[in-house]
Image (cartoon, rainbow, N blue to C red):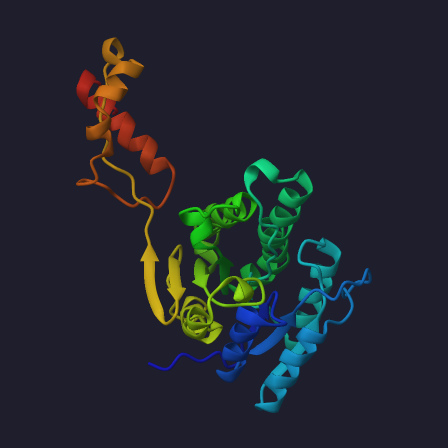
Length: 306
């Protein structure tokens, strides 16, 4: 099976360099028309031009592909609306959205300013939501959509000095979970990529030998699968240095404490049983957790749930 994107329109945010550029080039090489977004710093409806975005567009066109640049700030609803409107006006649809744009404001939590916190949340989380909101009605009308959030091991597992970044990167997983449910009836599949790559944000922080292994091009194949026709949905795909894995959020079977034993001391005493992963399950909806606990309680108390 060859994955192609002929007649599909893709929007890739933060595509002026690094992972975003690699994703945009990969989509275009397989037939997609690509909106190359990179913040241009302007206040007009299109956010101005970005040299990085123009360079990416030039690379796509030189290879025979189709692309346009747009300088929207992903957290500016008016500029994002203009970006999506231009894609639909010129090419007829907005089939694929890759929420890749991001910034870093790293420091320990003790030294974190509210401004640094809000700046990172604004771009990574709010920006992903705004871009998705703009594409969502077009995807629903077309009964087709492929959306990817960009997470990170810093969000899934934690990393010193990245409380703002980690919080935003785990938040987009929660956003994916809900959009997966809400988009299913309209064939909108939503996934999360958790990449590790040597980009403009990280290249200077890593030894040269590691940089050579962590090129963005080693991540993009995973992205292309997540936005393909036969893509899964609600998947967290980890990708670094040509390695691919899947993060699965599981919940242990847990225990039931009857009312007379429902004390913090008994929670402590039973914590090993609570933590036992032997019967862990991956849930598709939050209600499954509630159902599990209600069923345990009803069974223990002999209550019929009808």
